[in-house]
Length: 189
Image (cartoon, rainbow, N blue to C red; front, side, top):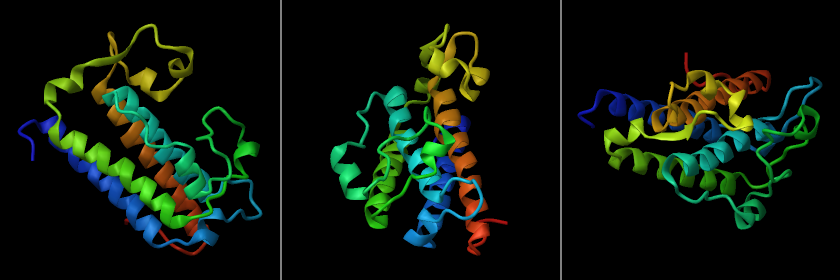
């Protein structure tokens, strides 16, 4: 446990977020993940791959680490659309599918482990480092993180909070919604 209250809280919240995804993955099968009902909602496959892939990509801006995802992972997971979908239409992403649950869980765990290991050893002063200064690039300027950014721009802490933690909670809500429609129930009360 860190002596820094902010870092300690962030480490615990990130571990809790990761535990929700682990619990969800352990209680679903491919039929659940790839299900597309009569509604116009996205399948769990979209929300799950999207957030893990975005966490992986965001971590590059936060830490400088190269993303884990590559063509080999795409083939192993059997991802239907090799794209996190942030800049694609809703209709395009309705077709997102995952072919191999075990490989997707393995990718998820690699992303989570790297993030948790980095957080365990990071100097708390690193949290204040600006990773995107104003003016923010157009792709970022309309995001929630742009609203959170302080005068200097988006810091490491802002990136961790917005791009990984808060974004992860948002997509867990989507996953829980679809799980409820499939009779799987929620993960917390």
